[in-house]
Length: 499
Image 1 (tube, rainbow, N blue to C red):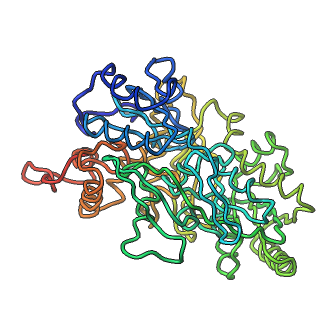
Image 2: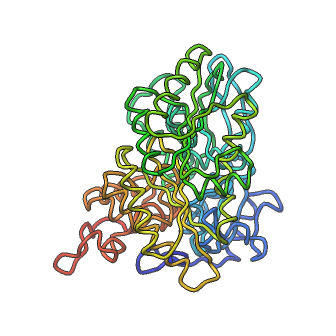
Image 3: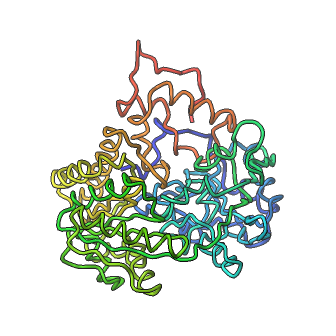
């Protein structure tokens, strides 16, 4: 299990007395915004990947950028690790506290600062919920496109840190495609303004670098997001299939015809039946798999595409193709998809959600191979994923109360991620590497690429204090898991910092 940080393979820091930390940080925030009791820190010991747990030394909840700057400066001077945290809905252990760290919660940065309807943008703080942005601008005929399944709760700062996507990322892009500017505070307390409200900014694209950096390079304190006009019409087609591989092949058929759906999602039999029991979305329970295909735009355009895609799905092997009758049924179809994760509680006491991405052409092969791997590990898998862009979210079903079940789930998850790499994909599409996929980084990337990552991290954070043990593996870890080999008794790149 990776629930404990290994000092042989992860960063090591000289521990700082918690009482000293409290004395140094208490004057920097309002009374009640520093938590040092074990009971008070329990809610912060894990993120959405709840199987991994670790306790910080203290939790601080700043309310202003000046407070964030002061906290980071103090941690820099004391040599104390810092882990930034948003809503805690992440699924890769990215907000898992490093032992003895200061956990910097940005939950009080929860204001929409300004809305520019003419410029179609909004300035928001990192603690603002994803869905709250669209709710705040709906009366202006606008919305914020990225929509993770956790959008009711997840924060926009966490979305930037992980480069989150969602159901509609196929047409509208990931977080990186939907933001204009970032305000970031470095470990030394310096404020950086990255990006531009224009179409481009001079110099290196540091905003894109910061997006998806998982808290390893700086702390995000403000985001300027793009807003898009609400489409005139959105309609959803539900297609049911008797075979999972045939359903996967239908995805390639749609995309090869030049249709770009707003969303194209797939659920296999176990997932759709659990979701149907949970949300009563109207899914056909006898199907081996379903596709949900949303088309949006002008009314005449949508009508033409609905007819075209319905015909494509029928010819691709669907035994049932139906279009949502109205907006209420459209929302029901999506409620089932977005409620699929919590619905897994009907199938097993626990589930482990994997996040890998593959070329669309490999979907049938990978789904078949995942079934074989699951059988070999003695566990069930339910599949719910963004089929249009090949972003897989297999849900590995297990029982944490059974000895060895969690370890088997982790092993199966690792095998699935390595399968994604084998077919030309990647170990993450939107959840990030965090703590969960740290070993698979050594499989995905070459020694030269790991060297580049380490050097880049050192440029922003020479002491390795920001979110240590996440995202970028140490050289020792890559040697240990076999992704990098020791030559003549020495690790390669031993001259670089070890984070």
